[in-house]
Image (tube, rainbow, N blue to C red; front, side, top):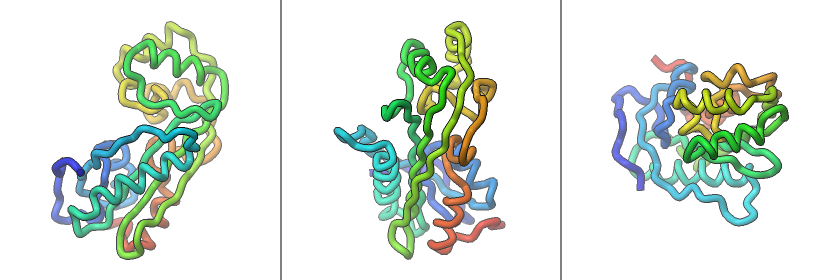
Length: 200
């Protein structure tokens, strides 16, 4: 069951099944006004589940959990940081955050984002992969980064749009997907569900 509405705007054209302020900001950047109704679902990966299948499954589950509670189209999304075919979740403490950054330091990893939009056309979905290369990160830097508070609620223990931008060497693919929502692909799904962009 979804939790109560966080915010409810009468001019909203889309319901966002996520409490992520980053996803809401990304949608606002393309003129999509949202009401927020986070979905409360089990996000535990299944045994042997591929990262791409995992994020799409969660995106679908979020959209479908909220859809019965609103007349608006609903967008669900999930992002995972993947290294050596292992999904890195959100770190629970400094030690885990540093362990994650140690695995990512000085190498390339993949960020996968699944998006699902429920609406008149049923549930439409996509999955976008982006390769991210990080420079080598010293342990003292990792600890200082944790102390900022930024990594605590971020998949993989970092935020590309935040203070961790200084760790990023380059990316191959969608920057917005790493932040939390691939805008090019999302706009296409929204158009198929009749959601107008640049809404005023």
